[in-house]
Image 1 (cartoon, rainbow, N blue to C red):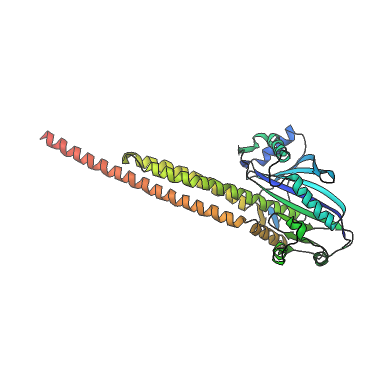
Image 2 (cartoon, rainbow, N blue to C red):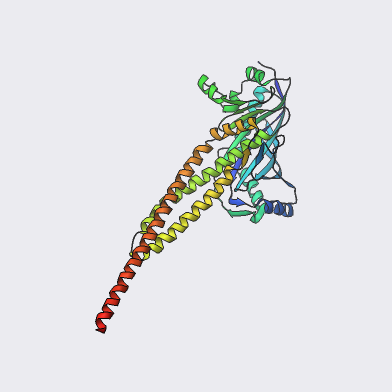
Length: 371
C-alpha cells in the first residue's frame, strides 16, 4: 500500500447549460452588480501570455456563494461560481477543497462528489443556482430558452502531495484508473490503456490526464489554464449539440414547407419560393454566425502544450464530429435555398413570359376589333 497523500487539492463538478441564443456580457456584468451587488470579473488564462492563448470573447465570472453537499461521511461545503459565455452558455462550477487524504481516499472522495452532485439526473441544487444566474443577469439573456440541454464534467486536482513527485513517479506509484473511471471493479488492460492514453506534461512535476467525462490534474503551481481550456471545450460541445438538434428539427420542417410551396397555382409559386428561401437564408446566416463565435471561443497560437491539451479535449468530447454534422446540415439547407431561389426566378420568368404573351394576344384582339 502506497502511503502518498494528497496534501492539498480540490474536486470540481462542472455543469454547463445552454440558456439563450446569446448573452450580452457587458449588460450581464452591469445588471449583476446592480441587482445582486456582488462583483464579477472577465475570464482570462492565469499564466499563459495573451498572445499565445486567449479567449475570443472573455467570459464573465460571477460568485454564487457556498452550497452544501451530502457525502457518506457527512456534509461538505462547496464554493459555487458561474461563467457566462457570449454564445449563450452558462457554466456552473462547484469546488470542494480536500486536504491530507490518501490516494485511495481521494479517489473515493471524487466518486462521492460525483454521486452527490447528481451529474446524470438534474437535481434542485443545479436548478436553483441556474435560476439565480438567470434572475441576476435579467435581460442580458438574448432570446432565452428553458431548454434542458446540458453537459457535465468532473475534475480531480492535486496541488501538493505529502512528498515531491514527478509526473513519471506519480504514474508509477498511484493508480489513476479508479478515479478516472468511477469504477470499483478492476478494468481490463485495454480499458486501462484507453483511460490513460491522453496524458500530458509540460514540466517534470505536472500532469494532465483526460477522459470523456473526467480529468485528473497535478498542478503544484496552482495554474488553472488547463481547467479553463477543458471548460471551453465542453461549452463548445454543448453549443454544437444545440445547433445539431436545432437543424435536425428544422430539416423535416423545411421539406414540408418546400412541398407546400410547390402546391397550388403557379401564379403564387414564385412568392412562396421566395419567402421560404428568405427564411432559410436567415437561418443559415444566424447559425453560421453563432457557430463561428463558438469555434473562436478560444484562440491558441503559440502555447504548444495547451494547444495539445485543447486538441485532445476537442477530440475526446467529439466536438469536431458534431461540428461536421452541423456543417453538413447547413450545406443541405444552403443547397435547398439555392434551389428555391432558382425556382422562384424560373417562376417569375414564366409569369413574365405568360404576361407578355397575354399582352400580345390582347393587342392582336384589339387590332382585329378596330378593323
